[in-house]
Length: 287
Image (tube, rainbow, N blue to C red):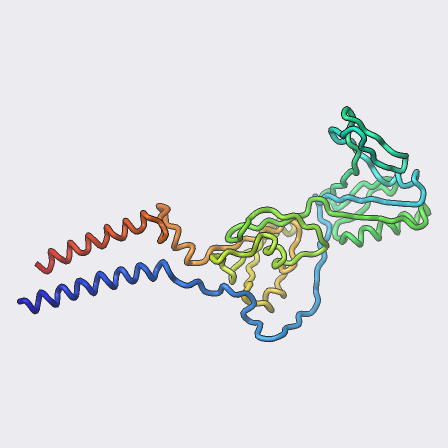
């Protein structure tokens, strides 16, 4: 009888120890696939296929034309008044120097919004089809139009995007919307602007949402596979793209329906309560 009770007590101790050890392991699982470019073991040369951002409907553009003739320059550049300007501030234009005071409006360059058909209404030149062009292509096109119509001999045309940006959400250090101030940007550069993925970010299943022809499409990329990543149609981003980094399984397990996780006090109170109930039940059983 004594030997039987001893075996039962050992069984209880083994069961409790195993249960406790399993709970500990469930909260201490080492995350997998946290390393980028796992397929790269030596130097890899990827063929150059950089894609510059192209103008789309609803984009806002800043276009400045400069010529040797100040009067002609003012014809190509529209100026708009903002709300206020501090006293003493001035702006040089083709019509001379505009000075402001505390009661006047600020003089600034107007922005051109591309309409749904892809056109802008540009001074002197009229309606121009700009959708599908890159920033440098549009600058060259406007320069060619001015010279082709014998309006100026050697104008300097500068085109800048005003409202371009991408959104990065999910398991990154600083989620948010980030402006694009360059002609092309890839997904790695965008993620770096958000402070990189957290340790809980799922690197092999990053989702990119992109609007194409009025439809929202989703693409999945694997940051652990460099060759596959660089061949993805969303490796180079477009204006309005949304990057979503999904949490890995460990992060998902940490967040439960009632808000408890392995790092919370309420979780361990629940574990202690469970163990107490198990011990009580087994103790009654062995008696």
